[in-house]
Amino acid sequence: MLRVAETGDTAQRIEAVHKRYDIDPKQVRLVRAPYRICPLGAHIDHQLGTVTAMAIDRAVWLAFAPTPADRRVRLTSRSFAGDVDFALDAVPDRVDGDWGNFPRGAVRALQAAGHDLRCGIVGVTDGGLAEGGLSSSAAIGVAYLLALQAANGLVVAADDNIRLDQAIENGYLGLRNGILDPAAILLSRRDQLTVIDCKSMTHEVVPAGTALLPFRVLIAFSGLRQALVSTDYNRRVGECQQAATALLAASGRVGTQARLGHITQDEYDAHAGVLTGPPSRRAAHVFGEMARVRDGVAAWRRGDTAELGRLMTASGHSSIHNYECGAPPLIDLYDILRTTDGVYGARFSGAGFRGCCVALVAPDAAVDAVASVRRRYARARPELAAEAPVFLCDSDDGARLVAQ
Image (cartoon, rainbow, N blue to C red):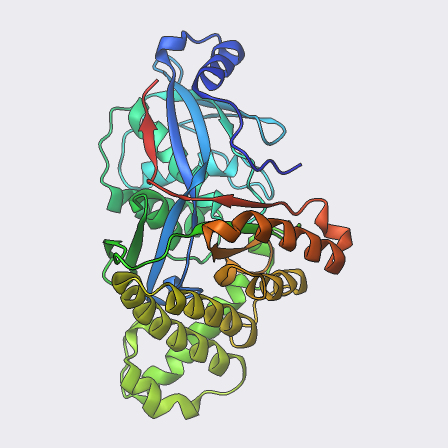
C-alpha cells in the first residue's frame, strides 16, 4: 500500500537501526533525499536540453551506520520486503525488480569512479512513493551514494554525485535517462526553480518574480505500477536519436553525438521535412518543449503564474500527442487536472507510462481541488482509484545529511 506521508521521525529511524543491527544509536546518521517534480522539460534531458525542477517535501530516508570491521552492506526497508546483504568486494549483478539494485549500483558506481570503499554500512530505508513520476529511483540512489561517502570519509561534489547517480541508472539498471532527476534532487532549494542545462552540465537556482502568485503542488497518482525499464521509455529515446542522426546528416554534420540538443533551431526549421513517422513527432516534441522551458523560466522570473501554468498544460498535451507517452489512466488524470478549478497548469510527472501527474494549484482552492480530482478519477478509473492517492505538498531543499 502506497503511503503518502513520510513515515516516522528521526528518533524512530535511529531506533530501527539500533534494534535491527544492534548499533549504538550515537553512531547512526541520516540521509534525506527528496522526491522531485519537473514543471517544464518533459523528455528532453536525455537529448541535452534545458529542464526545470523542484524538490518537494516528501523524501526517501536512509538511517545508517558505518561498519569499519565489516566490508559488507546490510540493509532493510520499511517500505519493501526482503533484506540486502553483499560484500563490497563482490557486488552482485542486477536482479530484476529487486530494491537491492540501488545500493549495489551505488557501490559499483563509486568503485568505477575510483573511490576506495573500505567501510560498509548497515541501514534502514523508508519512503513510500515508489510508483513512479517523482523520481524515487534517483532519490534512493542519491541517498545510498551520500551514505557510503559519509561512512568512508569521502567528499564528493554535487556535480560528481549527479554523474554517479546517472551511472547507477544508465550502467547498472539499464535506463537511458539523463541528469534531470539527480540534479533536481541534489541542487534544488525551497521556493526556487532549478534550471538545469543538460548539455553544459550547469545549473541555476532562480528566485520567483515578486508578482508570482502563491501555489501549492498537487500530486495525483494513477495507480499504475509497471516498472519504467519495461515500458517504451528506451524506445522513445532511440527514436529521438534517429531524428537527430537524420537532421545532422541533412545539415552536413558528421561525427557529432546524435542528440537533438546538438541541433540548432534554425537547422531543425530548415530540415524537419526529412523526418517522418515517430522520429518526426519526437523531434517536434523536443524542440517545442525546449521553447516552453525557455518561455517558462522567463515567466517564473517575471512572476507570470498564468503563463507558467499554460506552458505546463501545453507540455502535457505535447507529451501525449507528439511524444506519445501517456498511458490512458495518466491521460485521464491530466484531463481531470487541467479542468479542475484553481489549477494553474498540469502535466505528467515523470515519463508518463505510469505513476502520477503534477499540477500547480492556488492555495485557497487546493483542498477542494484534491477532493474533486479524487472524485472524478474514481468515476473514470474505479479499478485503480483505491491505490491512487491525491495529496498536496510544497517545494523543499535538496538531498542532505541530517543532524540527529
